[in-house]
Image (tube, rainbow, N blue to C red; front, side):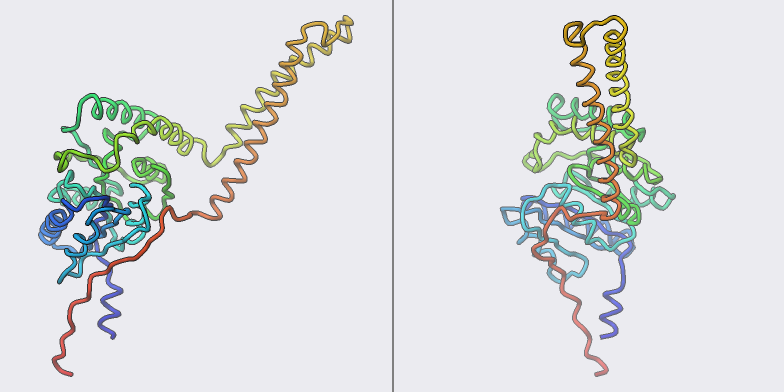
Length: 336
């Protein structure tokens, strides 16, 4: 029992987290390549596969790779929660000091993991992959991706060429300090950078997916615009919304108040009625005062939401059906 407890307390140095959605064609080969690479590295490791509600035989194939091995755990989610939630589930169940995330469709080459670890060993907290030579469609993927990555770099101040790839390495303590939701998995380097993490980027190969299909679809491209707005707000104004909305509200109220005061003076000194002389301007002034007050109040509500956020850091994005752990190695009966 003591030996078993000690084994349970042993934490691996490296955790590889892989979200899976209908990857029955690649999961066995992926695990084989991961094991080959990680065993050559010579550090304690674990592989965490997250089944994101697959409708094919992905889970069954993944469980086949557990036979006779103790380095693999499978987190089975109740349904399809999306890539961000699947990654968060994997991060939550990862026990390693270094966490590496990658796709499960063999688009990423496990043999490149040692290069990520080299950068972590140099002192970096986040190492991001850069698909320097992309094999995707030029018009449908490469051009929109370059435009979005350029905007992300400018808005965030983080000098990366490729925010979208899942292939990244993190120090576990950095991941634990982040709150992730929505589609923020692509912005993890930005959020980590705001927390003071050291970030670097390395070129990676970009292989063609089996059957040349992406499980999470091109449709998410249309959410990038809103993600950029969210990114700018989160990185610049999140901790002090009253400064943003309060300033805007006060400016609008002052403008409306100035117009209203001028019209009142015209009424008092020249006898010009407010509704008979420039009535539209009077209506605009009243509207500006009310709108400015509402915007200022929105800033106050934002401050209260931020306080609630910091008092309750996180709600789960996913529901786990079951965690499939590899069976422990057989115990020796010698000496009993």
